[in-house]
Length: 322
Ligand code: ADP
Ligand code: MG
Image (cartoon, rainbow, N blue to C red; front, side):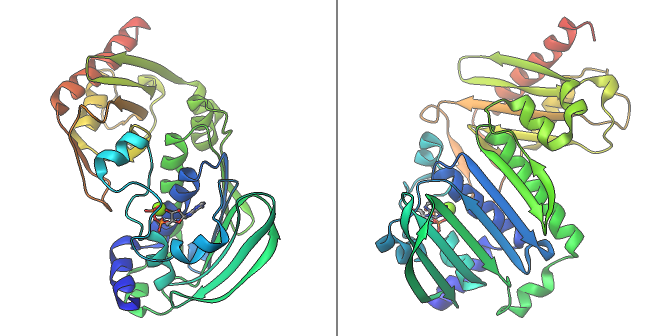
């Protein structure tokens, strides 16, 4: 079991940002409205995620760290149907296999549980007073897998991966207030009031957010909405595009191209848009092929969706006489 967990960890935990992603997704799945993230040394020394979600019952704490012990539903179809981000039940087990982990959790304010795991095994667990929610601290990632540690890039690179994934999670969940700190430096704070434009402001700055154009459109299968940078203020030399399918961040080259096509010939050569595109689909009606750990997604009727995105953005800019 310990070995199996280490092997699974190789798939799930590629770098510090993978840990952050799994922990924050768990917080969101637990219904948290506030998630506070702190990293030290780009997460290699410490990653801590504190939430005010549902918490875990004392008896369930050991289960949470067992592989395939998920409290969530198990197919990708259900995954998109219920908006639950985690579904494999192996993230915590994998993380605990390659780091020391401390968890503090309570399902209501009062008595909760504190547990410490090393080498994937619980070495100490006791009751303690705690607020409602969960704090998980991950210490010394990859300390027992030197081969993995070798693949970790510079701290600057790892921290930029962390910032990137937290940005995407925040954009997909404007109703969750998220903070990210590196040591004690605040890198990100989102409002958590459900307003996407304010969330964009928390990430890219107030001025940038104000200068973006809202768009919305739909056809029989899809609803698309979001914000795009105005062509003349688009400063970026590489694309900052966040595609979200029912709140889940994904990558798709053709849809990214459709966003750019929506600008017609208005973008200056060498400039790329800043865009946040929400796509809503009825998961029952659409086939979604998804690899558990990869962020690429294929959607049936992708060509129609591409057209919808391009035309919606194009029409919105024409509206504004851009
Ligand atoms: P999955 O998310 O795929 O179910 P994980 O290994 O990520 O698997 O988590 C295992 C279980 O631990 C979850 O199903 C959930 O019941 C519980 N859990 C993990 N993190 C939290 C959290 N922050 N708040 C409440 N419960 C949590
Ligand atoms: Mg999970």
